[in-house]
Amino acid sequence: MLVTKLFFPIVLFQTCFVNGKKSQAEIVYGDLFADYNKNILPQEERSVPVNVSMTFLLFGIREFDELTGNFSVMAAFYLTWTDFRLKWNASLYNNTDVLVISESSNIWTPNPVIANPYDSMKGFVNNMFPVTLNNQGKIIWVPGDIISSVCDVDVTHYPFDVQICELDFVCWGYSSYSLVLHSPTKELPLTHYSKHGEWRLVNTTTKSTNDGISSVSVKIAMRRRPMFVVLNLILPVVCMTVLNLLVFVLPVESGERVSYSITVLLAIAVFFTLVGENLPKTSFRTAIVSYFLFSYLIISTVICAFVILSSSLYYADAKRPVPKLLLRVQEKLRSRKSHRERKYALKEKSDDVLSDDEDLLTWKILSRWFDNFALGICVIAIAASITVLFIIVPREQ
Image (tube, rainbow, N blue to C red; front, side, top):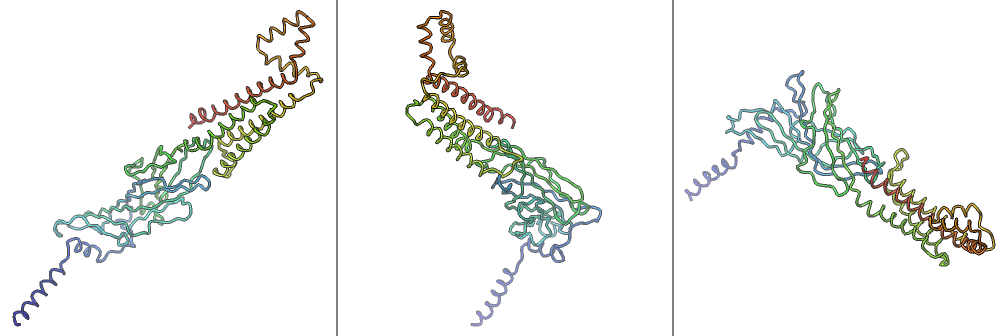
């Protein structure tokens, strides 16, 4: 019993002594932050501003809305600066030269904000990002978030467009005489960048400005991946218009030519509406694809008019003579062989030949030649529009 009474206090004392020991990091932390004020700028001399280095780390493009101009990215800042109040002699603390603080709210941080936000101006108020500092007072802080900014959208060359969005960052409340924010690199490091399904990163640049308030501007140039729009919008319209050309092959007696051409016209009008819903509502910069679809709408409308006119020619009264103007158009569309045969027949002035010639120049034959003429005009128009959209426009970008 006596042994127990003597042994228990010794064990209790040893336990308390062991559990009461502090690590060297805790001792350093306690000594550094005993009289530390996180609300004061770590400016050792008034004439020397605090130098904050900011490297923008782009992880990926989250969203780009052409209608509203909202451009949001997943990114982080690699921020470094020196706080002269957080220096210590590592030899006095068992060579402890690095200290990691789990919450950034315990020390002063520059906390950059975006100067051209999409909705509201805010900084990194989340304290979940740790801070690393060494015995020389150098601090490293890497906060991350989803950053949204407003971007000037130019859809002129949609879907072969290149968009350039700019992100401007400032340390709000600090003049360039007290704090200098700069980027050590001219381009963004893309080690951790994840590719986007709709946009392909083309170029990135950074620029530091020191005009009253220090700022860092990040420009991101991205090119749209056009294959989705081409396969789901442009090619279907092209295919429907090509099918619309086949209306001139249908026999006039079928009675389906007009209804067929009008059906295709309405389908193209629906696609034209779908494009309009996904583009900015502005007339300053109209997408070339809108002109492309509008031209196909006009071509289909002209095809409908040609079909109606061809049908009226086909069912015209056979007793009514063919106008001379239409006869001239027919003669221009004839082959050279037919043209030579007709000239030979006119020179012979044979009554039988003239009679056969008059039989050939019927309204039905004229309707067939008019179909060939209309088909040629429409093919040229479609080929020209495809050349402009798929060859000329991409080269401009």
